[in-house]
Length: 287
Image (cartoon, rainbow, N blue to C red; front, top):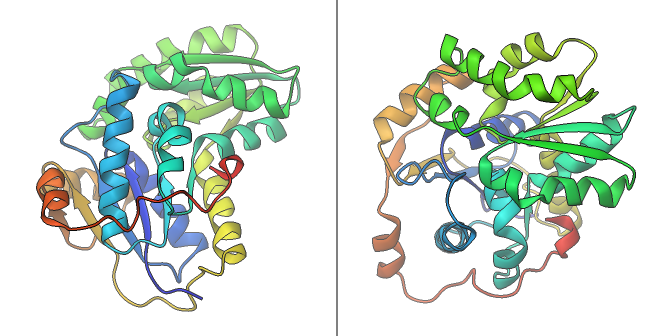
């Protein structure tokens, strides 16, 4: 048993869709959340930049005492986690492979659509992960560069967002998908609009629930599950805290505890040593 917190991070408010699942399924676990809102969106950035962002955030959450990490960002999971995760001893799980497993289970025909950031779509990571589980699958990935900025601006349900969704989803529907993966943690906020567009015959996969199930199993297997909640969650951002809280509370329909803005680079420079930077204790297949 271990009452230290779980670290969760994303580029912005998207990771709170994973936090909601932690609250629901792991009520004894305390959360340290980091949203990299000063550098959102991640989708159009090169892999090397995403890797360095991930190193910084993992180091920071490790220094704050996290016992386990949930990388609640598909772009980071696709472009950086396999490489950067090996550099740290903190056990972790990303959202991509659990999402791929859920999609492989859900499909009836093997035709699976994935909507994601440009970086995730270009990487082919979902295609590879799903085909490892379901070799005959046809995976159609669609980059959606407009969606994250709309969600971050609090306009997830706006006419502009619906028009963008229709433009991204129509080609996938025309190709006959029977399953759609929400390959960015920002997209579940638009679940109702997505369901109206794709119709009742398309199964929608939100990787958040599957990811937290994997995290729960790993926490138990590693003896890290908390026996009881020991304090409040903490939310930290690299950008505007007030704006984040306003948009986040509207999206998740819940009050957040105190949200703090931190200077990531200065915080890392002020610390000595790096307890997180050793080889991960979790096999790559879990991440």
